[in-house]
Image 1 (cartoon, rainbow, N blue to C red):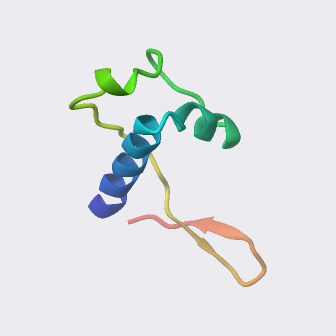
Image 2 (image 1 turned 60 degrees about the vertical axis):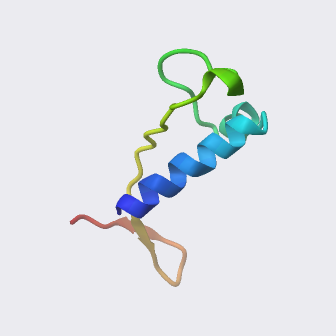
Length: 68
């Protein structure tokens, strides 16, 4: 589970660095909570904490939450 968090953080930092984070968030109907998206040069040491809930997908495409 820790690797998922690290991967999401790396992906978000990469999107920010390429100027694509705002579009990614908009395309996925996500919204930023808190302050505005920083400029890439202001993002040194920034860490993204993206909550996620694992889900299993059945053969019919239905999902159900998985709890530890």
